[in-house]
Length: 184
View (cartoon, helix red, strand yellow):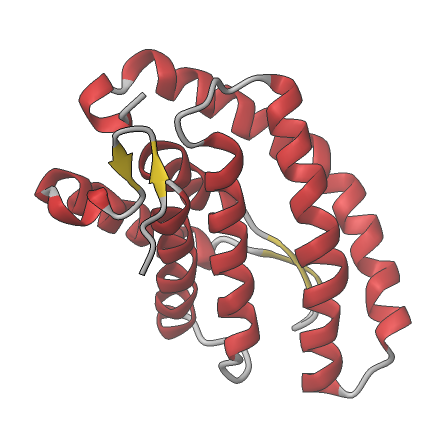
């Protein structure tokens, strides 16, 4: 199997360092807590959540695999803490994809406003406007077009919020997190 490398370290190197594993576990725990703090616009269908933050942080520090695992495990733990509706693995897949994509944009790269906007603008159509409505349509039987329209409004509202939070936290991470942790 071919290894996935970024410079001298591969994307699985966080699994070999206890300190890195603890930080990824902390990000998963933060995801679980943030999953409790969701705002429902349409009950059981449309919500605003800030669970993207720990996923992006793990991806910034440890790469796409760590970001994906943080998203997927955080989704499962968040559902276990506060199950709203049945468990659906499609949303866990979405969480992994989001973390992986954040890692592709942010890992070992300068966090610039252009890069943050590019990441959010790439992830939003794929996950928020295509995959989420597909999973909800499968679960609820509602029309895909109806579900997409409500998500477009949510995405337009959340786009500047996500960009501001990711850019600010990325710059702070670059400034305050020791280089041996962020591996940049």
